[in-house]
Image 1 (cartoon, rainbow, N blue to C red):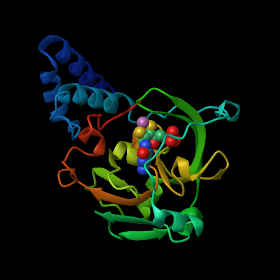
Image 2 (cartoon, rainbow, N blue to C red; image 1 turned 90 degrees about the horizontal axis):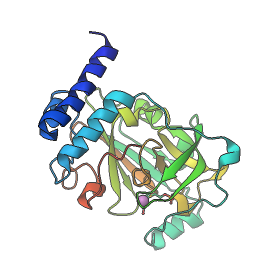
Image 3 (tube, rainbow, N blue to C red; image 1 turned 90 degrees about the vertical axis):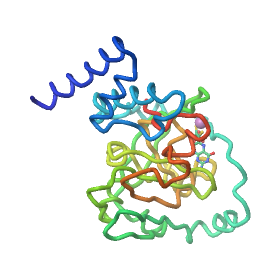
Length: 252
Ligand SMILES: Nc1nc2c(c(=O)[nH]1)N[C@H]1C(S)=C(S)[C@@H](COP(=O)(O)O)O[C@H]1N2
Ligand SMILES: [Mo]
């Protein structure tokens, strides 16, 4: 069977199973194809599995919509963040020369990068929309290094299934699967709208994932861990979001 018809068959199977015998059957199909998200155990579990599995089968290679420069929002809205503290203030006052990004876990060459190193790597940019689950959006231009480039640099092992990433802000952590980690629009971003990333928008470094809701785009990125399982992280649900009642997979 060709890739396309196989994919079609699986998604049709998911839809039929959902209609005929309830989403539990769809979840079973998804499980067979390794498409079960880490937060599938909760009250909305079967629904999350169906959404994630269908999205992955249909759109894993698709791009988030890009806009033209004239569509960039004049007044982008920076969601309020908790106070960043004195040490952050000192780092900021020194223009973040001491900011580090550590990449560890399942890598041949785990590496701690300085901000200057990150900035020296080839950049890509996109003009995309970011949206908060609370209902607002804006369009902005993000520029930075592809996460795939960083993963290649550290020699990510073939067994890696998830990329866990953490903020300087305690309690803010997230993870994505390899479809999003290797996606060409997923950036370790250090510029926004033609300038250094402003602190309210996550400067000096932000993981920008335009194919998922805003809360997956973690600000003040400090740490990336490559893993084959999310069980050992937090409550094992994949990120802080499901611990607070939101979906791990927030694809748009
Ligand atoms: N470190 C950190 N990252 C964060 C947040 C935060 O409070 N702290 N808020 C998240 C949420 S809920 C959203 S919707 C977006 C908001 O992005 P914006 O400020 O560019 O609008 O950032 C996400 N990343
Ligand atoms: Mo949000």
